Length: 210
Image (cartoon, rainbow, N blue to C red; front, side, top):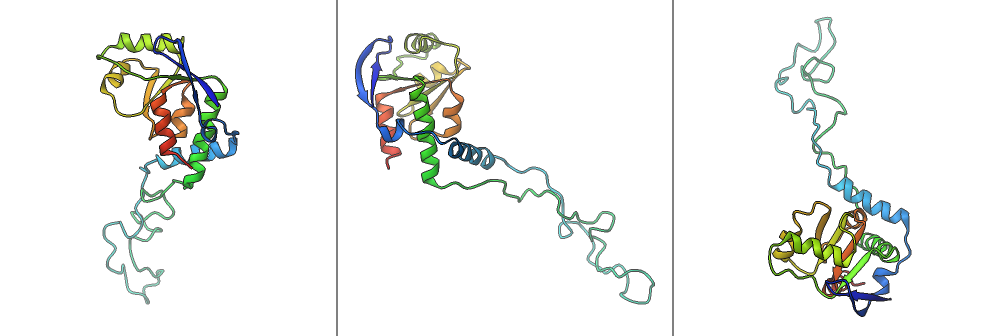
């Protein structure tokens, strides 16, 4: 798939061949939902926790002898039916709410959301993303020139860490930055437009090659 490459001034420079197996994939909403659900659930850290009978203090001695008292038999005062006893079937911090999804499915779902970005013409491909100083104004002008908008949720994909670029965009609340080898379905779906460079596409092809 041929795609226009822009300069940082927003002018067309050349065309670039986007790999079809990444940017021209038919979207399966069920698979994308499954991948997104896995990301969200695996991020949850259980907090609620109730103690069972083994975690309660005391109860080591049998409350009274087994027979002859006329009362029901008990082996511990920390039984769930006793006051200050353990809790049965309560929430536990050891519970694992996460779900697993295999690598191929996760990668395919990522290709689908990237393809959706391309098919909606929300991808802006530039020759390179460079900054010469820590300047928010320079970052703002880049958005204005390349995407023609500055108020949409924007995802910028870099081929590698670049402190000038990251710090320059840090004051723009609607802009987030990801490295090309660390993409995920959730962050791509959150953006309205995506700006990346030819070098980033090369990294994506190498990282997620089939």
